[in-house]
Image 1 (tube, rainbow over the protein chains, first blue to last red):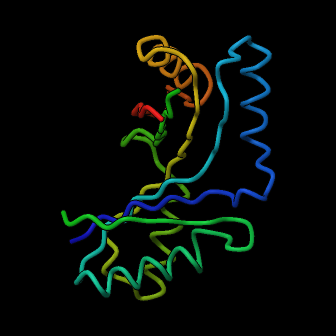
Image 2 (spheres, rainbow over the protein chains, first blue to last red):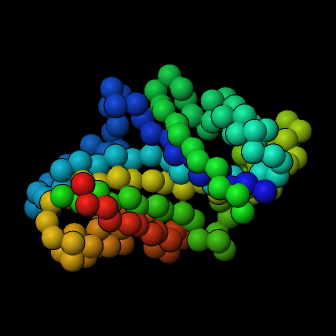
Length: 81
Length: 81
């Protein structure tokens, strides 16, 4: 059994409105030591199978369902559980 | 300078509709080896300051802005960069 930890973020060239709102709010609150904020999605998926098959399956899952690859980048790690 | 990696998830007792949709879709697609899916938010925040001050600030940020503590749990780690 593997646990896939999947991170999906906007690509750096894409404006992230949620992150901008958080940054602006913190700056208005006087927390000027906050230099950058990024917002993303985090998925944990539990899968049965061998590592190669699971790796391929998770890659397809990210590419076809979890991430909008036009605007978002994804990365994941597999951990045996 | 510290990078805070912040994870916000629904508490286990709260129904997560996005995770349910992903699980059901994968099951309909025949990917029955997928045993569980959780969906959360992932933030990265860059802050200047010493570790204790930054730790307190990030905890307050999670509690008061990033997480709805009625329904969501958060955890974070600080990494010097």
